[in-house]
Amino acid sequence: MKNPSVRRLAVSAVIAAVYAALTMSTGFMSYGSVQFRIAEALGVLPFFFPVTTWGVFVGCLIANLLSPIGAADLVVGSLTTLAACLCVTALGRTTVPGERPGWGRCVLTCLVPVVFNAVTVGALLAWYGLAEAYSAPFWLLFLGNAASVGFGEAVVMFALGLPLMRWLPASRFYKTLAAALDKRGQNG
Image (cartoon, rainbow, N blue to C red):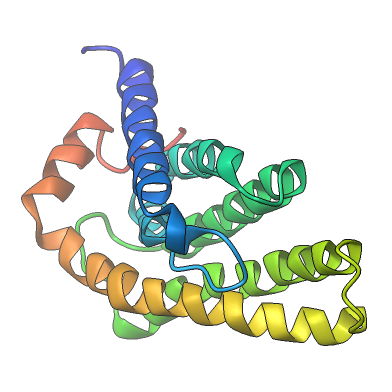
């Protein structure tokens, strides 16, 4: 493929497919108030390759088609992932291509999706809980759901995403992806 736009689209499509497949194949732990979405570790890719933001977003959108909450999670959950990926992209803008980021930047990058998901998905699950006629007040449901969603996201991001961030720049995969995306996938 000589056209950089086609390569970027193909890379995004592969990332979307991997995210959706990972989430759907582990559905028993990917939905609900405690979520261990293994695919969320892919949320560190936009740090290195901004164009992968769209693949992670579309993959999340596809995976959320199976959400027990339905359309609300399809919209809110997917937009949360998009917002987190855009912030991760901004964190990576000042990194030298191919250079391993420092521990502080890696930890901050992994915290972004944890905070975004804890707040928005925690609120969504609390609202959904109120609709199911639970007797607890919204704020109590929110705190419980935010803590459990944040916990699951933190486990995935720090057990999988952080090692991925540290390993990726020195890997052959990074060099292959960088070549396919014309260095860093900028302007994508």
